[in-house]
Amino acid sequence: MNESPNCVVCTRELWEDELGRYACRPCERRIDDRLAALAGPRGLYARLCLRMEPGSRSMGESVSGSSSPSIPANLQILDLTASGGIVGTLEAWVEDWASQGLATRGTGGRLQHRIDQAIGTLRLNLPRAVERHPAMDEFAREVDGIWRTGSALVDGGREPVKASATCQACGNAFRFGLFDDGADCRSCGQHHTRAMLLQPDASAA
Image (cartoon, rainbow, N blue to C red; front, side, top):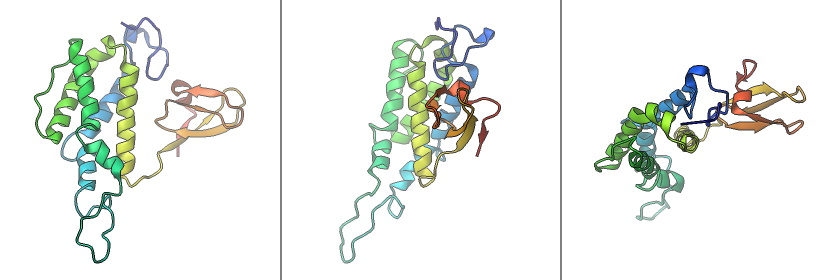
């Protein structure tokens, strides 16, 4: 049980009906959305795997006159889609949650089946975990990092969505990544937590 009055993920003060939870309900929904986006035949994981198929832009250019297959240019995608990448990370969390009675271990199989199984287990048990698991902040960061990295690679490395905020110390405007945990004002260096950043005057651009 969380004895702090603040969410461990975004650090905002918990509402009265959220007290005792490790994460607030908006953060719980965001974690669930990130997990859902990774799963299934059209999810981020499956789309990353397609990047490694012959003819995709993630493969290196063939050398003229050479019959040897090209080497994948984006080894990051290979690392993420291998057994020890995204799948291994999520299965490690399933194992961790299972050790605390919060999940059931998977049965193995092909990588896509394993990741769908792990995500299904984590999403099913997330409502209990946000109330009982003290490492919810670490879990949220890892899931968010996987989602952001996968989205950037699938979308061709597009810049993340930015938003603007007004510094609470000096009053100057600065920009930050919409999914950042926090950011510093470029003018005075004042640090702003995610809860401070997500004020009504912050707007995506």
